Image (cartoon, rainbow over the protein chains, first blue to last red):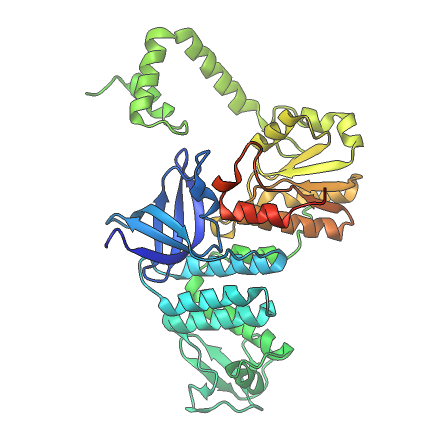
Length: 236
Length: 199
């Protein structure tokens, strides 16, 4: 890799390393997710400290051939996103999803665009539909896209009045009658999701569906950022 | 060259210290063996005692060998009705040195960081909820670090305070004393501008 090329990206996560350094996971447009060492980052007078924050568009210069790169020069590439409250928790949820699902050093230009677009809209649009669109876009770009318009088993279009069950990596399967279990969705909601027509029923269905589709990809460890949306309960 | 087992053991044990690698551990070991055995014995005793007895304060979670730390058991500090929330015991010491704050603390021992697997339940927030609902707290000062994670932690706790009808304030951030504006980074300056106040 050319060492003087600047790449665009965001910090997904950083954790302390040695006395004053940090290990930083970056999501970049050109290289996808990369791990870098930021030497002396946590030192007293390091000006990079305030730059290497989450949700700050940056340009990085990386060097090194191994999986762990060295962080060289960094520049601000735009205004930082200032989120607060639930919007901030949602943005952290995006980062956790990306950190868990993306392979290292594999460029995902589509996902990068979706990420930037979602950050742009987080403070303006309603959170729930935005998160669902992000999850659906992410699934699509990772090769697990869901076709909300067709019944996979019978090779026919989804019918608004029928009920369907979700089969991972395949899609929809018509159910004979309205089963009262978790994996049973009304055709009209599926059609609404395909049209990104968000109402309370289609949103609730989309939430269940994206969770079901993401679960096998995420493995057994639950997503921690989901806890941020729930209040603390007293243990005693 | 290989050292005798005891020396080897000492060197590898010293490497647990932050910032100490093989070379410095070796230097430390020989310095202690050659010149300061008395100090080294004291060190081993102090280490042993501290590791055996220091635990978390049952109220504020800071480190102490008592069940309730000195600050928490001071009745004057309880009267003030102010609770300051910080990320680490070092922050308590930094604030104590200013002698500006006379309330009590709550030490989170970290911040919310989902990717590291740290959620609300790992920061002792259930204990904080207990304090908010049982003790007479008038104000909660959120003194978490000015990072995105620190900010998220502050927001989360602010929401808890709101649910319990306790007022929550966030420490100001901006230009350091003696600093020069031209050398200050953009985001700190932005914060300083958005947090400006009437003179």
